[in-house]
Image (cartoon, rainbow, N blue to C red; front, side, top):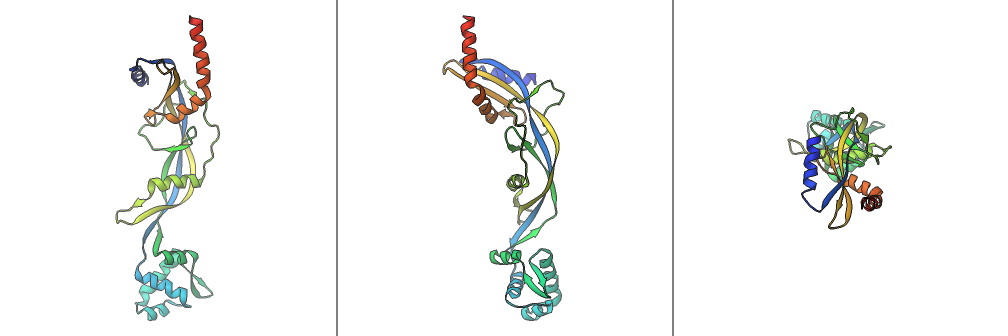
Length: 254
């Protein structure tokens, strides 16, 4: 970490107008969640399925044989397809008559079939200080035994729910499968917090003599870049005090 700090210090001081007033090291928490979710595969409805749904919508159908005669299709094939449509929630039996479910009506109107896929698991990484999710890194965080303090403006509480995770997974996981079908995350089934990482941050409080400006730079070792969110938080709390403090120090030294 000393090498990183020295490299950053040297980079900042390349501008001769910059003075480093103070520096510090501290950490922010990043929480790791195990998340179980379900995807659906979307495909265009084939003509036979559409004909079955239209027939069920418009006529009282009691047996697959009725549809087989109506559509001139092998009864066994109709039976298998109708059973599949029942399992997927498109059809249901009401008083021995096949009826379209709300899902069946919707998919008939759109012409798009949604097939539920097997449950999957993934990890999500959440920073309460930023109130945002981060991508995974090869070696996250620092050793908890480091003698550093927690970020002084860290959030003590955060609200996590399935809706927020669904938004993140939708962005990360939606796409096309190997066969070219669209797959989308339909539901977050459950989640649990697994670990909390301590992510080191290096802070430099600076003064630009040419601009007469006090400001801060914070290097985030997880993101491997300057962290403008933490910088803004610190400046909102402390920038006025820096001017008072360091102007007073300069007057005393004179």
